[in-house]
Image (cartoon, rainbow, N blue to C red; front, top):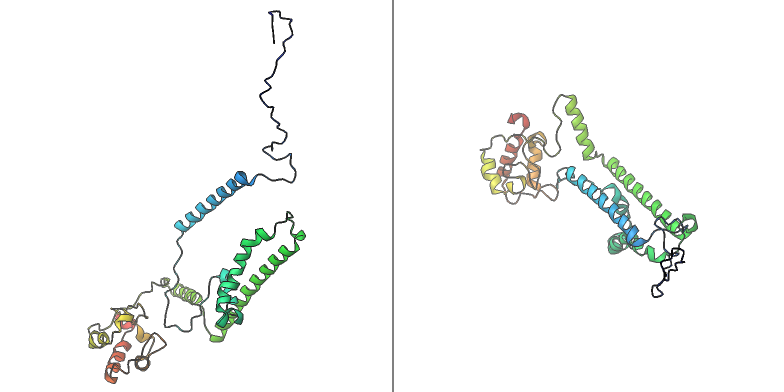
Length: 291
């Protein structure tokens, strides 16, 4: 401190002993370069970055969903007993897993809840079981082996499931519906006709719509409850143009004895004359006759 106005006098600054001097030697630098092998703080630095990346991905996903709606599949045919249901490719391994004896039948609960939920449960408890600081895969034999076995099992089950599906198609002489529709579209283009739109094919007009076979007999038999008020289809296939597919004899057989689980027999509720009347009228329902 200064006592005089002499410019040559020595000035001494006295600090306040009540103020504690801070030690900045342990403060982490922003770039963490002073700590080799260390990473940034999980909260809030790392977590905030993860949240921001998650928001960007979620917004991008929502934009794709809004701009490109999921396409509808082909109309289901409940009378097609030859149809082989198949899940999407990323569920093929679970689909194949549920075919095995220990995952179905008497063990269905184990197959659905146990084997299917085991991988997800393992992912949840993995951070609590594997608490080591080592991150190199060849230094973590147990975790790396389990992951390798899981990947091989998923790939193998997916391949077996698809191979079995192709074998069933070949054994039954079937062509998948999407391939069949593609072939029909190519044939239509070659013939100079418009490409058919799946699920929106043109239904032929009804022939002799005022015939008593339709207005009286079929109405009495409640055929329109399944085939539609105008036979355009609904819970059962459309009957317009059925004359191009089935003959009168085949129609009589189908009406009399039924077909599959969807078409009930009418031999107990309709007389042979009524069945013949309906089959005769349905055999006239042809696309060419409607034009």
